Image (cartoon, rainbow, N blue to C red; front, side):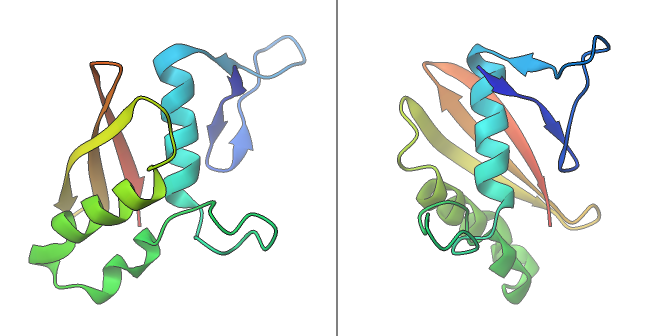
Length: 112
């Protein structure tokens, strides 16, 4: 179980607490945190985060492939999770990461 985050803030549950996530939704929350945090920004936890912030240096045609590699690197230690692909949305400046968790497909949309 983990708390839901949106735009860096906890989501209130309307009863003075915070909304919680379970199962695939929990995994997706952890994935989004891992992908949006810059790798190396937590000095005591250097493995936290991804290098997706570097995608701006790549040519637009290569960003999907390179982004899939960065996502796979960042999520390598998440149990039962595989990165199956990624596509770059040039207009929205977002990376759509396709995942599979315990046989179920998941999609993470990462704004950059």
